[in-house]
Image 1: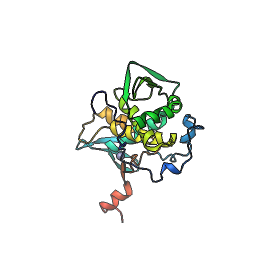
Image 2: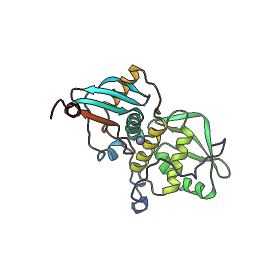
Image 3: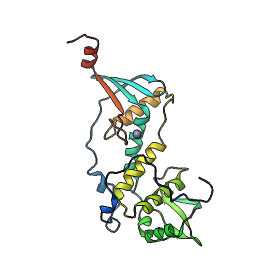
Image 4: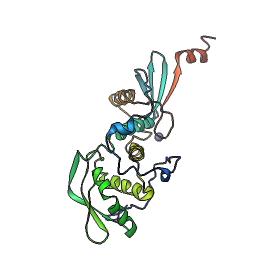
Length: 240
Ligand SMILES: [Zn+2]
């Protein structure tokens, strides 16, 4: 994406689309509050994994670990996605109270229709910590942003928020949080073929152990493959 141009019209490629159309939902804007408790009550039930002890890493991609009940193979990318996802799901929307002032305001250039949408949703955006000010023509500037936005990716994140607003019109805070959390978890996760130091492996396992659902990534792929001690004994025909 180049220079001044805000790519607000592009769809947000999270790779995950919700099944239901947001059009059927009443606008939550007027009543929506941004307290984390609102949306997270009905999130997935807590499924903990046991305490894992690292054995090592394979192909810069998989972490092997053991516990009393067997062997665990962890996809490190999926694991980090899950950790980041839960982190951002918690943070996103918890805003306005903690705002980061920008030294240099970010400028956005909109189409006429998008400009109108931004104006229409001005108060809403302000409540989530984004104060768009008209800046001549179809430009707007933002002088501060919510604290939770990842450093160096502020503009991109704001564009994604705006993109969702323009795309869906009706904004559900819960969905916004979900989508942004998935998007950010992907962008900021370690990729495959990345060697981790022992302390990094331990930190990853520790964080995963505190996740609400350590077993699947936000896209539904497995994070952990588990072979119980019994299954292993069966494979080696130590037991019947
Ligand atoms: Zn994933």
